[in-house]
Image (cartoon, rainbow, N blue to C red; front, side):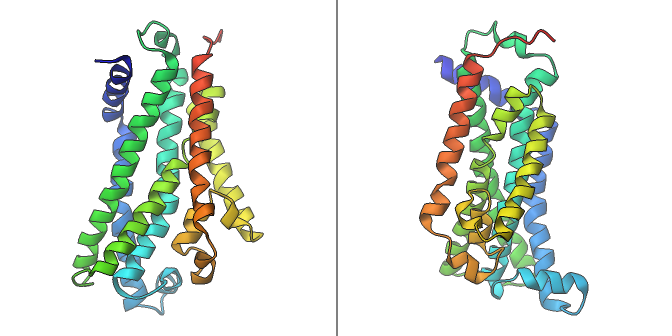
Length: 260
């Protein structure tokens, strides 16, 4: 097996055993689409209640299209938060748990270990978004939406893309967790990004801000705002992710053992 394969196998083993990964998997894969189904029921059956009114404000249309759009909205936020937390943990735990010195004794370069972490995380995140959409179809059938049509598969694909783009945007958080040598600074950066996204969106520049674009595209700012998000603006999520991965890999390559 190549050194890259060994690195991926090593990181995948740690990843599978991590309680935080299992928790996030359940929250995004199961709880998120079930929550969207509950919002859908509240919006359509009891529109006079506070919950019903707030849920109705999230609906862009009726039936499967509206429900899957709601799933996409929640995924565009939940994937960033959940995957972001896992990214911070995966890279920051080596320093928090004082295992970074052991990395120098491995027959695999530290840069390859960093890239292996990203490979495992992103494969898991993309699969998790797919699971969330699959569970959404089951939950939608349970609440009485009937059989989905071909156009609903397009809506499901859009919801998956929204979650996938949000997952990609979590990668730069590894830079903070690595440089600051701990996952808590990375989590702090994640919270700051969420706040900054709200501010930028409020000033009307959200479509050009990668961390806001997926949510706007899914309809969080309304149907009119969703139509203004261009493919180019969505594509900006990719170079942001690649840049975060590249900087993290270079930092890990030159990493020194902390004297503290």
